[in-house]
Amino acid sequence: MEPIRVGLLGLGVVGGGTFKVLARNAEEIARRAGRHIVATKVSARDVAKAKSRVGEAAEVVADPFQIVRDPEIDIVVELIGGDTLARELVLEAIAHGKHVVTANKALLAKHGNEIFARASEQGVMVAFEAAVAGGIPIIKAIREGLSANQIEWVAGIINGTTNFILTEMRARGLPFSEVLAEAQRLGYAEADPTFDIEGVDAAHKLTLLSSIAFGVPIRFDKAHIEGISQLAQEDIRYAEELGYRIKLLGITKARPEGIELRVHPTLIAAQRVMANVEGAMNAVMVKGDAVGATLYYGQGAGEEPTASAVVADLVDVTRLHTADPEHRVPHLAFQPDAITDRPMLSIEDITTSYYLRLAATDQPGVLADITRILADASISIVSMIQKPREDATQADIIFLTHEALERNVNAAIARIEALPTVVSTVTRLRIENLA
Image (cartoon, rainbow, N blue to C red; front, side):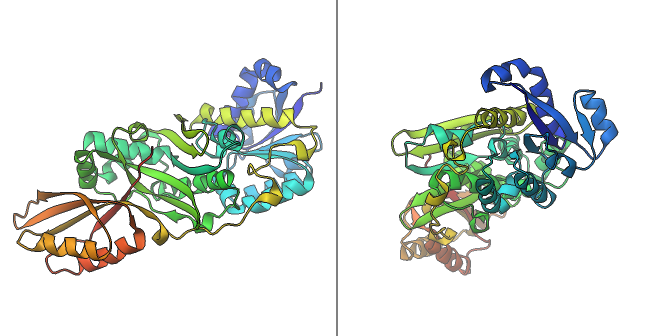
């Protein structure tokens, strides 16, 4: 059979890795796909540099639209990032009847509903395994491997930069700013790390996982997002003392009243597997009603781990290249006419357990005042510790609570902070039991 001809948009880290893997493993890939898959055309801003990397194996062009409009190209692989030019290119490729593979989580989180609708109209596929958790095949696991289940929840460490920072803060006792600078030196963090450290990157990925898990439209605008830039070293230390570790988790849960979609620093019991995912690694847990809790672990970024997912998508698309569209796996796991627009819950409507830390004057009656406020808000205390501060007249007080409604917790925090004996704002972190 004639080979499948691939056009690569972008020859950066992932694009270069994809080109390399396709060439190195060409025969093994062909054995799996049923025909050869060849990158015949590449677009890059620096044409001369790209030519030096691909040699005579592929044509290099500066204009990516030459690739998406080329009638000889069967599959377009979009690896340029961003959500403006990338959107134009993907929609143009679809309009020209080409299948698309992308690693672009921001693009799909913002424009996925539009892109998948256009693809369905044109009878082409948009594959995006590499958009979430790098080389971990989590999209395929949820969309295909767990298709017998009603998914109850998905929770994951899906940003390697923040996991590296939190690991180093805990292991070495360093403040956030120092570890961030080190992460940038080592190449784990971008020069502008905002999307990573403020949780936006994780929210892009979680939004896609939520849609696949629950058959709902992609609703990035409804995600609750908190990052780690304000996380204090003492909270990591106190959490450890209490038997927990702090991870930036993306969590989506199906509840009778709607879907939770939230990213935030989270306390996880230290004996849980997820609490021991260290460095820049990723891990995702999925709970299904039939299978129970399942765990997927591996490298969430990097040249060849992400290329592994891109090439796996190319193999899938190649296998189904000539299949009738109705015989293909739906983009979001559920048939397009079965996608249901369920309510997305506000963060104030979630129920979970909490870690609360505050500084207060060390005098009689302080604890009584605070516990009375918590009781009035229907918040039950699991445990409490008190630690002296450098100022001998003050102490840090840390509470762990049973499950409570976030709205009630927020109301209680406002009352606690108004007490004259409380000399700091209240740090509030959520606790998840990932069992």
